[in-house]
Image (cartoon, rainbow, N blue to C red; front, side, top):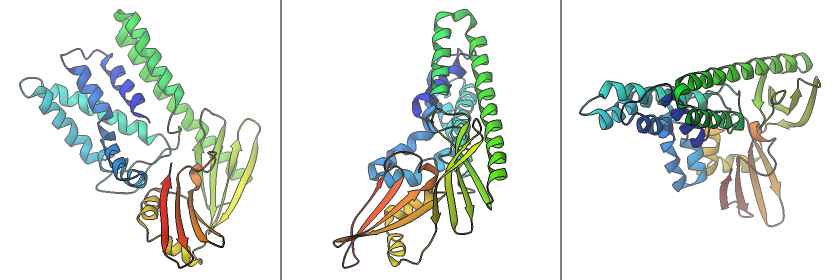
Length: 298
């Protein structure tokens, strides 16, 4: 989720009735604190890709950061109170991020694997607008802020539950229509009944749309994973591709040749439904086999 949505979650928790001095600031800071890893963007987009949702989104920081926030705001009085609030907001952030397909290393540093429920897209306007509407209602009717905030959180849980149900039904539907070893169902922006799928069998990956409304499966492409081209292996030695592969769940490399250069284009197939070049790593070689340029594109 985006930082604005996380901040709105912190404000919604505040409206449950936590009125002690500095409670709002504690909740807002803790709700966006895991995204401090955005500072890695200064070292390049691919570096951000590697380290975002890493250690700061793990269980160790889940316990350490709230304690630090509790010390800062409650070193004189209210340490346990503010630590508890910070823990609530920090936990909410991790759970919200776990819902989308970007992937979160929530068990780091004990386990560096990515985990994702693949329920909502990275930015979900229904969640953001719902939280914002809740805050507006609380602002207008201050006597019922706790009730409105509680209903908002229950609706958010119900929304996630509904997406979970549709996700499961889509995977079940896809299995009835297509044979594969593994199936991954990813959410599409602003869509409920149509999902993006990645079906893998051996070194073959098929991608496309599975539509519960029309009961149709539309294949958009078939990719054969191959490492026989030497330029693919050479591109994997670059820092850009190393960072990309650390993040990617379904990477695919395509080699394009012309008289002046050889280009290796790495795509993350989980996002290949997006128009344009998104989540793409590019390595350009000269005819002498040396790297001319490499970059990553969101």
